[in-house]
Image (cartoon, rainbow, N blue to C red; front, top):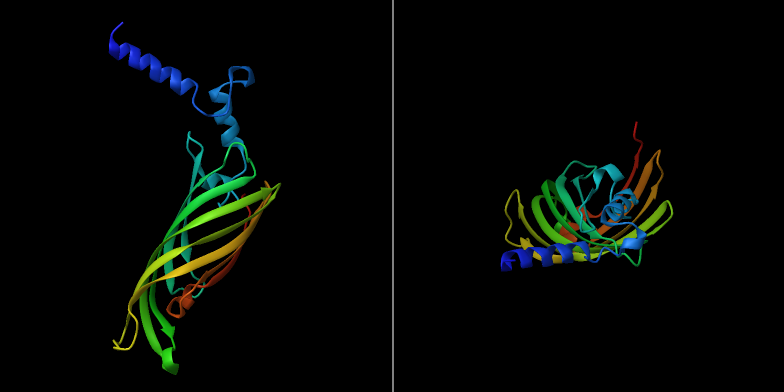
Length: 202
């Protein structure tokens, strides 16, 4: 047997004994993957059909962001992981991009229109208790802005802290979500959002 065949045999053996938390008496890797795919989606994610589950246990969820006033649009991407020994705990990381056009602000009691772009990341943790789940997130955001009519006394870039929490109630017939997100900078106050939604599949 050549060294190439020996290495291939070792890699196959390692793959079959990988830490999926399954032994031969409890089923197999295929059954474990089926079990992972049938679990509820993470507390911070959308509906189950919106979630992508990879074979290594990582879940991916992405969604568009649009503020009710129409000034802000963007997207979020969340990568999460569910520890095998803690089935009701969800851990994840969120990446977000948001762009706001001609947002009205009042620095120094003077009306002003500002364009801003933000790019940030947060750590997310959630807990599922049956159909109910809660989660919290905290991270940093880098932003750039410019006034539609330039003014020299307006701050044009910086970083700020972002934090938030949310709750989700999920049943087969509907999913309800509530989320609060807050930016710790006066110039980013237009991104502070309280959102609620109900999704009814049909």
